[in-house]
Image (cartoon, rainbow, N blue to C red; front, top):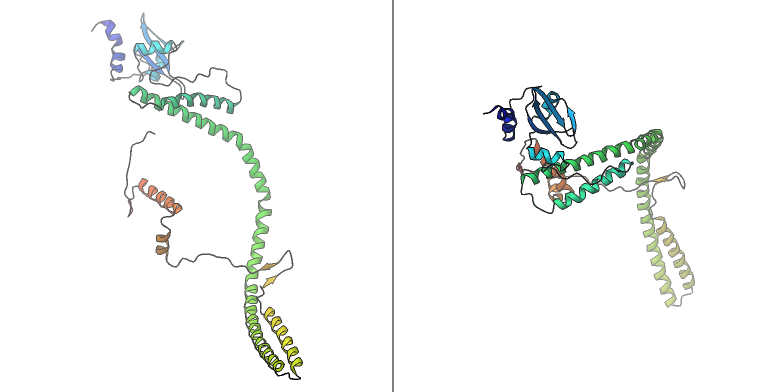
Length: 331
């Protein structure tokens, strides 16, 4: 191996997948790339000249020893370096959005423009299947760029909304006790009335039963008086008119007794502030398993069961009626 070849051997081996050994502050001649977190890749060139190390990061000269540990694990070909340094980007990355530097000053509008540009290119990319490593890399990087936009939007949304949330909480805190305490005391007073109103309802049922019996007795007398009046009229009896009047009186009395037998709901208070017994319908579960079998096909029950089953699967617990499965997904 010539001296010239040995200068490039570390980089050439790294390009072939054999990276190392790496020593901090001891650069190796070659072409690499590096980037700041969530920023585009920048091409790096490192070379030895007249016994001194030099390095360029993009169009900026940097210290070779300092940049070395940041770029050494990302060797690139000379062709990739040349393309990148000339503004042609990277084969394994999507093209940068064509939005220039004239973004709106408003963060929301600027992010809308950024997403619109990414969306147009990404949707065009999605129309073709991924068949190469380069396409796969682009898809992964695009996914990261779009999730970064989503995170920015989430953060900006939180920043913009936070003052409103804080103000809303202050208003809620101000009014909470005055809303909840009177409402709780109002409900407590109603529960305090339950026993009294239930006893009044029991008395009303007894009164209604007695009134019903009395109404039925009077109705029987009225019916008998009506029959007697009809018979007297048929005989041209002098007492026919008197019998008819008595039948009418008893009929009116029977009607009044019938009205008196109607139920009266137990209540307390006055108009506008009246409290009375109301019927509340609720379920008392007497056979949980039987009820669950009836409800098992309802969508909301299936969602709860699937959620609990997934939680068990992630914990490695296989319950009766399920099995633990796995599949590979891009993440």
